[in-house]
Image: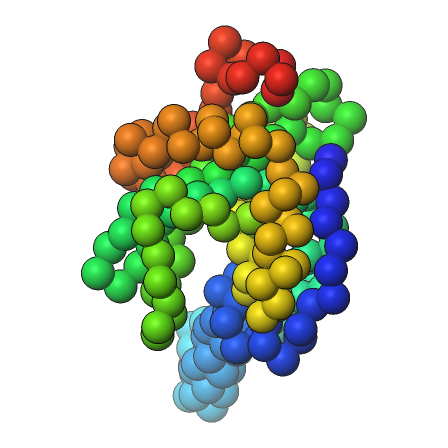
Length: 222
C-alpha cells in the first residue's frame, strides 16, 4: 500500500473536502431524523392510548438510534488528517466534464489486507466544480482512496465502499500535488488515460466501479 505524507490544512480542507462534507450531511440528517421521531414519540405517548404509547416507544427507540448514528459516523470515519494518513495514494484523472461537476476516474486496489493478492478496479466519483477551477479531460488528480464497509463486520474480500479523495482537497500547496503526481508510477497514469472512454459506463454501473481482470492490467501491476 502506497502512502503519501503531507501536512493537511485543516481549515481549508473543511471548506472544500467533499468527503468530509458528506459525513457532516449524514450527521445533520441523522440529528434531524432523531428530533422528528423524538417529537413524534412525545406526542404519541401523551395521547395515552395503549396503541399510541406502543408507537411512541418505537419512535423513541428510532430517535435514540438516529442520535447514535450521528455520534458513530464521525468516529468511524475519523478526522480529515486520519482520512489522508490511512488511505493509499492512487491515481485519478478527469474523465468527464459536466455543467456543474467533474467525473474522476481512478485506479484503486479494492482488496482488503490479508485477503490474498491485489484486486484492481476502475472507480468513478462525481465532484463539484469550484468557482474559478480550470479543468480538462485527462488532467491528473492524485488522490487518497477512502476504503470502508457498509457493515461493521463484513467478511467480504474487497471493500464495499471505495472512492478517490483528491489531495488538493487537503492543501492549497501546488508543490504537494506535484509531489503526489510524481509518486505515482507513469504506468498507472497511462493506463487510466487509455480507459477514459469507459468513464460513463463505470459511472452508471453499480457502486460506480468495475473490477479488472489480470489480463486487462499493465504487466507492472499483475
